[in-house]
Amino acid sequence: MILVTGGCGFIGSAFILDWLHQGREPVVNLDLLTYAGHLGNLREVDSQPAYRFVRGDIGDADLVARLLGQHRPRAIVHFAAESHVDRSIAGPEAFIQTNVVGTTRLLQAACEFWKALPESEAEAFRFINVSTDEVFGSLQPGEPAFSERHQYQPNSPYSASKAAADHFARAWHHTFKLPVITTNCSNNYGPRQFPEKLIPLMIHNALAGKPLPVYGDGRQVRDWLHVSDHCSALRAVLEHGKPGETYNIGGRSERTNLEVVHTVCKVLDEARPGCRHADLIQHVPDRRGHDRRYGIDDTKIAGELGWKPSTGFEQGIRDTVHWYLTNPEWVESVTSGAYRRWVEQQYPTI
Ligand code: NAD
Image (cartoon, rainbow, N blue to C red; front, side):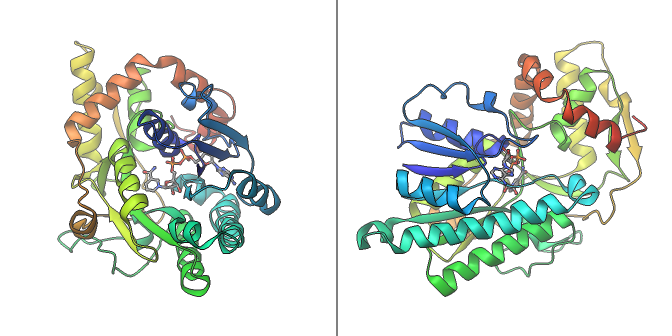
């Protein structure tokens, strides 16, 4: 049994589907179902005996202690978070509560549970703290990509909250010896990503004939990784990673935002002949404090765990666009109600 937190979100749901499709051990999914969590993401597995959903907050120490005692997981894979930078600028409080306070309570509950395990089970136990490359701050063009030794310099409330969580995770290993491993991954894309993030937002707007908002000059660089590759990296870290270590995970695919949007438009043009989606691109004022470049040096995970990404960026975008084209009801269900109200507030000019 493993305990997954935030399993109804984009990456957590991909991880659970992947895990169960491979016939691995049962999963308990603890998720608060915020605007970003959708039960429908796990419809394929929700009637399987190997899957159990529990709605709740990672910051609810009593609930977490109860779940750990009842299910006795051999690992916790911790995805639950507030994850969108723009939202962290509009309202940082939820990021502090979930990403910092929530993660710390989860670490503490995990530690109490782990200390009471028999020696062999304690030895095998792992706490995987899923984090981001954004904690490292911004790179200049031409500067070497982030290695695990790069200094933390978070610039947004989101990355600051994730950096704080990573520091607590490190402290729980160093001080209490909890077998924690932190992963710092680059931008993910793929099916079921909430359409506030760059790639699904562009697909969603383009299909609706709406402007494609690009921040500033669009030359901010990100490294992109297909979510299925993130899942395989996390499995490698869970099985072979060393407690107390951190691993950077990336897609070897640095692209400017504008290049990403043009790739999406090209694939959409092919799928919908006669449309010129790039005509919808509209530059909007840059995000406050927008980091210029992130890049991942994956030497450590490649060398020590033998992991490398397997999905090329162009093919991954093609598959992702295809998924959104063939699953309009998913987009419809997540873009109604609360999400719509937030979007109208966030992008009043669109
Ligand atoms: P997401 O926003 O799609 O999903 C987050 C999930 O966490 C949702 O299901 C939500 O309901 C749940 N959640 C939020 N607060 C909770 C709480 N207090 N208790 C329990 N559940 C709660 O996020 P994602 O994109 O799937 O990211 C998952 C993790 O991976 C996050 O920790 C994020 O920082 C990290 N990460 C994301 C990316 C990316 O590109 N999306 C890249 C690197 C790392």
